[in-house]
Image (cartoon, rainbow, N blue to C red; front, side):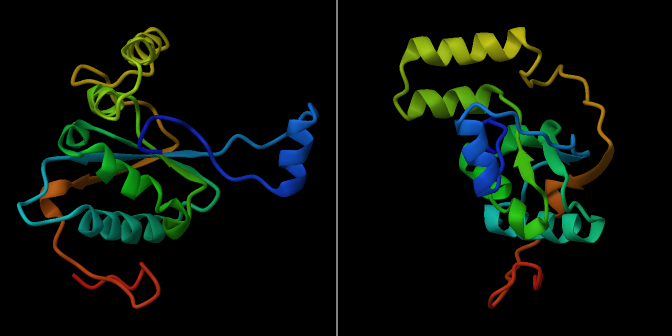
Length: 168
């Protein structure tokens, strides 16, 4: 999701078994890296971006795969923008969309009134575990990858019912 928390839906039987302490097996999914660079033009919205991303990922074919967003373009996306993109995972066909923990995550946690000690703990833990992203972070290794310059995003609309019916 947009906060650096990995999660996805499971079936009712699997959830019940896990809650009762039973093991749940799963195949490890492929992870598609989606590199974002640049900055969106003034007037473009997260909706324009997510419709573009959805179109690209549907064309790629990411069903039953995780999509992790990375790259310098993340510095230009608010946490709300990231959540918009991650929450559209069902529309682009992925099991989940994921953004790493970085300074924007910490800003959001602070802004929303989280306990300062816990915010510092999140940052320290992410850094210690190698889960922190900043400008010096090398690109991760993925099963496959794609790239989008945010400057290339155009205003668009979709619908009336399906996000894949995008019209720039």
